[in-house]
Length: 225
Length: 226
Image (cartoon, rainbow over all chains, first blue to last red; front, side):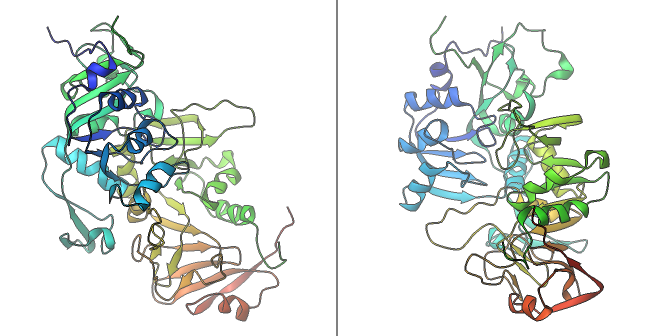
């Protein structure tokens, strides 16, 4: 029997080791898996490379991990949202590395990794600082930059409903980075509002098929029940 | 507000009036966010937000927000009838793939060739941020910049060549500032289409680094008091 349901949030993230690369879904606070991030903080893994669109705001979630010194490097497109004070402080004092990637390139690098593709050409960033050191080429009169696939050891994703096979649905724009990160990570872990019986999710409503997902856990599953 | 200057809202209104009915448009941070306020719903201009929303509107006073519905400024928004949600890779396909009619964004600098610098001040210790800007300007059919004509210290932002790290080369099509509306022509550079009342061409040139040309039928813009 396939059963990807973790009894607790802490159990769900217990496989994350020191030095791991971890994708974290969300656009700002929307779609950010706060419950999994709290569990990861409690779990204690360190020297993490975190791949996420933003670098956390306030003091919880990603900002909490950074403030606790668990993140060695951030790979993101926009770490300067209002309220991103923890990252700014750690960045200025040189205690965290930053790889700044245009958002569409970040997404497509993950999609390439998850889809079994190699490097690809994108017009984004052509002949700018982000193209430095990369192959650039003209194609049909337009300039392109060669970008590498981006895989990760783990993905922490916020979804809406799951079943025990790991099929996922999302709620509104909370979807954003979830599907592509589940594809690009070796182990994708989803926190969900609810876990429903197998066969309950309409097949054509499933956005991320369970083949891309290793673990699902209810966002309230602080203690086993 | 000096008489020979447009308010941010007035700049936003001018941009809004320049968008064709039925267009699919992305609006960025700053003055561009204000543009949405001045789009007449009857013209069915569909707003795109990079986090996967096509068809959004601002909240009406007192309306509750939903944390799973925000715009690029991370403000709560709502969906309009006909809206759709897609994941990040499809949303960026809309942007980079040439499907948006226009993108409206702010910038630190724009060059007479249409180069845009909008993501890094180049100063040590200041956190840079690219977000979706490089993808938007790489793909949108029209790239409209809405910004102040000069920076906080009064230095020109419309330049012969940008000095800050570039977002993209040769992409800006029009620039809306508090002083003028300027089109970027591939051969001539900056061509002023409209100028604020009370400002002489010589004054506008003095606050612009690159040479200005003037379109036939130059329009004068009256600053409003509202």
